[in-house]
Every structure is written in structure tokens, then in C-alpha cells.
Image (cartoon, rainbow, N blue to C red):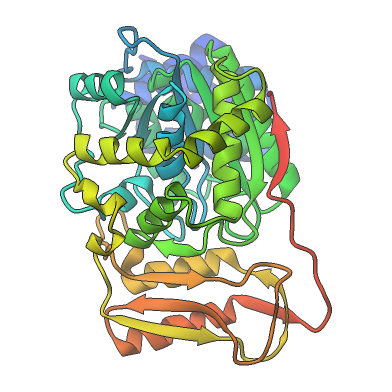
Length: 439
Ligand code: URA
């Protein structure tokens, strides 16, 4: 993109609802990543595309150009099969902490580059950094050595990987153009493709704590992500899963590590474990080490029962400088000084959870960040034991707040109760998996 005229042509084409020719779109994205195109032209293009939509071919080109804008991780020297998983973001959604070790126990090699939490959603790196000593800044060689040795590494994505996405995402954030399926799918899949794994599994969330509130929109996003992964030559599948309530019972950082450890120790069952086994089963099937996802799930359950997942978790934590004793004694994780029980104000069935609000309550306690550079507090948390469809009596405990002081705890307790809607009639719990795409 050497002349202003061609950039204007690209914007005008999109504004008028046409398809931008592949070479022009590619040059447009690459020029922006190289600093040769001003923000206002990219912003105009994004808004035109947001309003007019993108074709499947444009989504592929956007993805491919974003990958080409930076480095790629070359996993060629790993034995494989290499796998990656990605959740589009939710609340109490720390599945990597369980799926990674279980996948490694099944002989897969998981190479995962992760981000930090923002707003109401938590980030894998923040959770892992709650483990004393844990390091997420790994160089490429160290990352690959570790994966070859123990089958798992989770590291911070570097600035050189998909710089175009970084720049475009920041612009989308301030131009009200985040919520477009093609822009989200190309953003997510460019990072997954640059991460190099041969098999990619997406966990696309739908519901009150997700980007996509409606299941139909989440399914559309899942389908496009699978198409983009396959166009990039990877075995790709996606699950559309429920985020109409927090996935696990604990929302925070240290507490989500504790929850994962308890699951790996066989001490905690429920929706979180259920989804972890399902995801691992799908990864095993994608990678060809299980005949189908059902077999993969049974293999994962066997590895869990045999303590192999916990063993891999210990290896993983130790390899990245963390204290592996947290796998045996979660009280070594940071602890908040104040714990406040939250009780149901009246009897009834839990009918709805504003999951985003629950995530915001945890973030306001200090567990998350509103701006990119905010510090987080690893110890504070919200616990929500009640699930959709549960019947409780007035005064019965439904959760707990872990906070720095009494005032913060009381504010969070009111926030949690305000996020719950009760009914005097029985209500149904939603299914955990809404749809499987591409398996
Ligand atoms: N997550 C991403 O990485 N990109 C988006 O556009 C939305 C969510």
C-alpha cells in the first residue's frame, strides 16, 4: 500500500458493500502493521466492514495477512502431535490448567500462548502467576524444550507474534468495532495459526458472561473459526459451550488454581471437570490418539483417576519456576485475609445469573483489571456455589467473598446477590455443550 489512493479505494469498496480484492486487502493490513497506514484509515475500514460485513474470503485474507505481519512459532522439531486450545473468554473458565496436564498425560504436546484478563473475563497468565515463582515469559527455545520434555508449556504471547492483531484490536476497542464475527474470528485464529500447533480446539462461549450472548451468534463464530483453521492447514474443531453462569465455582486467580488442583486430585467434580474432560477428549481425537471424542474423554478420565494429570501439573509448574508443592498443599497459594459468607435473601430456584456482573464483582475486588496496566490481587475472589436450577432456602449460603477488607467484602457480596435472579418455580439448568462444530 504505497499510495493514499489505494487505501481510499479499499475503504470505499468496503463502504459500498463490495468484496475487497485479496491482494489489496492483504497489502492494506500489512501496511497498517508496518506503520505505513494511519489509524484513521484503518478505523474507517473497520467501521465499514463492521456495518457491511466481510465475506469468507476476506476473513481468510485478514487472518493470513495478520499472521504474515509477524513471527510464527515453528514447532517442526517437536515429536507431536502438537495441540492448542483457546477459549473466547468467560468467568471461572480456567480449563487450560486441567486440560493442559491431562492432554500431556495422553501423549499430546500442548503449546499455548496466552493473554491476560481484561474486564470481566479472567486470563490464564494471571491465574498461573498466582503460583509463587511461576514465570510466563519463555523464549522460543525454552518453550520448545519444555514441551518436548513434559508435553506442556503456557507462555505469554510476545509482541512479535501477530503485531497486526495487536494494533487492530486496540483500534477496534476504541472505535466500537469489536463485536463483528469476521473480525473476532480472524483475530483469534491469526494468533492460533501463528502459534504453530497442528491441531486447534476452540471453546466458544455463549451466554451472559460471554462475548456472544446468543448461541446462534456463537455457533456462527465457531464455524468461521473452524473454516479459518482448516484454510490455514490445521485440524480444527470448536465446541460452543455455556457461559450463562460461571463455569467453575471459584472466580479469581489463586482460587482458580486451587479449583484446578482439587479437580486433578479427584476431590472436586461438576461442570468444570465435565468440560475439561470433554475438551481433552476432543483434543485427543483431533490429534488422532483417540478414535473419537468419547474415547478421548474416557482416556482423559482414566488419566485423571490414575493421578497422571496431577503429576503433569507438578512437572509443568516446576518447569516454569513455580512452587510445585501447590499441587499437594493449595494453602501455599496467596490467601485473602477476609472471608464473608453470602446467603440467599429468600427461598427459591436460581433462575438466571448475570455472569458478566459476577466477573465484574471479582474484578472490582482486585482479581481483574479494567485497564491493561492495572495490577491484580491474586488472592481475592468470588465463590458461587449455587447453580442454575438449584433450590435454596432463605438464609442458606450460596457463595463467599474473599477480600482484602470488610468493606470490600460487603460491597462485593451485594454485587453478587444483585447478579442472581431467583424464582418461586423450578427452572432448568442449560446444557454445558450447545454444539460441536467440525469434530
Ligand atoms: N479475543 C480476541 O483475541 N480477539 C477478538 O477480537 C475478540 C476476543
